Each structure stands twice: as structure tokens, then as C-alpha cells.
Image 1 (cartoon, rainbow, N blue to C red):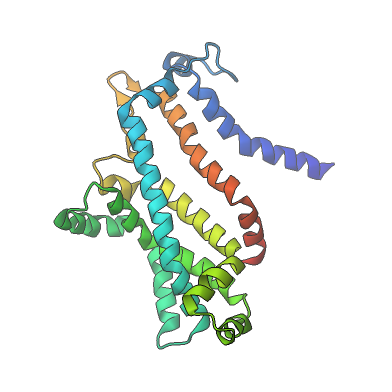
Image 2 (image 1 turned 45 degrees about the vertical axis):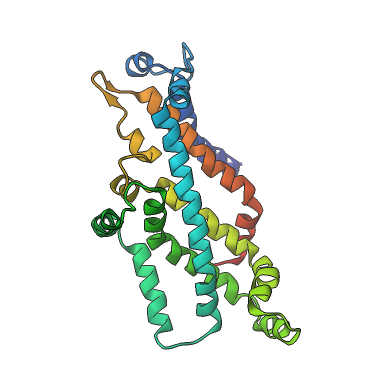
Length: 262
């Protein structure tokens, strides 16, 4: 009985902020600032209408989704061969290189903001989807390599040797045989790459003219104050891409957490 009570208490604490965010998104600023109610007294769709009809908000969502998807594809494409090399081969300085990759993930984004800003301004990549997507690789690629290396090490080396004996070229073996064996690891790595890129603010704001949705949300201040309802509606909408990603890779994530280095 006590375990059930603890579980329900934990569930309430977990869902309360989400419910309160949805609750605020259907309220006006006057109701938010003057009363506190468990549900909207005068529900309104004004906040969502502003987001879907405003080019700034709508384009911000598309811009953010574009660089996040691009970053996820690049990170996984680079991390897969790198993780295979770390798992299957021994070379000079491999342990040091692997540790150096992880230190890039540990470093704060502020360390890279100014160098990237100067570099992209010089080569004409500033204020583009590629600018943010490539910048996010600095911490997503090490994370993906670390996750995938654990999954790859769990695959017996005999499979590589058998495929070589059967006449498979390495690209054909890697795509048709090896990648399906570590599909759970790829799903987990893609999930983390997507989420870390989606919620990152500093680089997305520094390397663009505040086009990312996270940057636009920080500018929701007018002469009358902060538009709380609009911010809440934007917050609800920013949860949807992450929820969709979790839904599509849910089976891989469950198996990945059980089997891999997560």
C-alpha cells in the first residue's frame, strides 16, 4: 500500500508542472496575474492563434526543427564509424582520444560561442540552419560515440569475420547487417542528440539573429510586461516534437536503456 501511495505521489509531482503549463496556455494575462485557478475560468485560444498566425513564431518552429533534424543526422552519421573504430580497433592514443571527445561534451556551450560566432561570420554561415546544426555537433557527436561504442562492443566480432568470409564488402556489411543489430543504440543516440539540440539556447541564440524558437520565447516581453499565456502556449508546443520522437523510438529506447551504455 505504501509503495502505491509513493508511486501516485511521484506521478502527481511529475505531471503537475505539465498540467499547470497547459492550464496557463488557455488563460489570458489578466486571469494569470490576478487569480490562481486549477482550470481556466474563461478559456481562450488567443495564445495559440498568435503563434500559428505570426510568421515570427511559425518560422521559428520550422527553423528550430530544421537544424535539430540536420544535427541529429550529421551526429549519427559521424558517430557510427567513429564508435566502430573505437570498439573494433586499437591504435595509438585511442583511449586519450576517446576521453578528449567526452571532455567536449562536459565543456559548457559558452566556451564555444565566441569562436563559432567569429568563424561563421567570416565564412558566411552566420544566421543559417547549418551554423547551429554544426555547432551542436561539438557536444552531440561525443555523446553519440560514447553511447554507440557500448552497443557495438556488445556485438561479437565473429559476425564481422563471418560477413568478410561470405564476401560482403565493408559498406554493405555495415549497412545491411551491422546497423540492424545496433538499431536500439542508434535509436537511443538519435533521441539524445535530438533532445539536447532542441533544448539548447546559448549557441542557437548567438549564431543566429534569434531565429530559434527558444530565442523567440525569451523576447515575449511587451510594454505591459511578460505575456505569460503566450509563453505557456509556446512551451506546450515545444513539448510536442520531443514527445513524437519518444513515441517513434520508444521500443528502441526501452531496449537501449536495458542493454546499452545509458
